[in-house]
Amino acid sequence: MTEEVALAFSVSRNQAYLLVETSCALMARLPNTLAALERGDIDLYKASKVSQLTREVSDEVAAQVDAWMAGRLAGRDPTAIRKSVDHAVQKFDPDGYRERAENKRALRHVSLDHEDETMSKLSGYLPAEVASSVYASLSRAAKARRASDQSRTLDQHRADIFAERLLAEDGRGAPRAHVHVYVDLLTLTGVREDPATLAGYGPIPGWLAQEIAADPGSTWSRLITDPSTGQLLEASSGTYRSPASLARLIKARDRECTHPGCHRPAEFSEIDHITTWARNGSTDHHNCHAACKIHNMLKEEPGWTAEPTGNGGMTITTPTGRTYTATPEPLHDPRPQPEDDTPPF
Image (tube, helix red, strand yellow):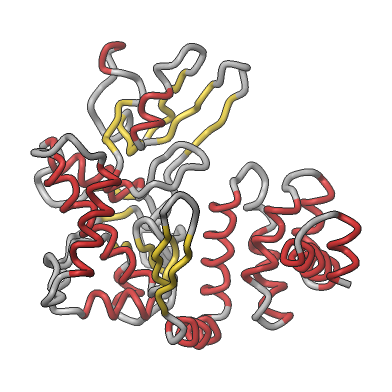
């Protein structure tokens, strides 16, 4: 069937396989995702993000994920959908997810692909927290080197440092860089098994967050959230008004560039005013957010505007008059407080 579809649609075998796999999953196991596709809320590529991440789970778990995603598909980009599905799979099948994760981690490897014009691609298939630490360490060293050497771009410095470290005789590199993992206290202590978030990657299982936290080299920062919304309230006690703590709060709250469809980690982005300083925009957590350099500059282009909606959210208007609203995701699912049945009520 895959070969027939490949010929009929003039696509590669892999593309045809994806079409067949997605179609079968939609018809047999993902009725809500199929309905969203039929309504035009998503296209087939976005639907495939649901089918791919549920291919190895049971029909029961697939049904739970499909129902949970029903209201989380429309108006979202493929990466955001993939992260939500990954979160849902961890939520409804924590034991199966852990088993599959252990199998995947056993498949870690380095690959070399030769490309054109004397270039090759060396890549590593690594556990998410290891790959994120490597990239953060390279970026930190590249920024420091570029401060004194402007003859190379940041990417070139990063690539050169990558090669130098791998080719070093003793194999020793710079100290492990700090990476951000967002996890609520109940999951950290093992009371709950909600997914955590690894900055720049997305949802990770609670057990992995616990392992990272238990590492002697890990450092902790306290983040206080509103339990009813999951949104960040403050980053540390008594220092909210200082610029440094404000930047820490915003990066912890946003976790990535807040422009819809952009997922550049907040620690590699800029702290930007939504309403610009020149237009009397205030420097606070309502009017400031994390934005990569490209999207920081985009609102200065003719026809583009952005208006704050509070707590880092914004409404973007494009030159064609279309509007898009972006709001930082909560750090955890809302947890309504239990009703107090002791007087006074």
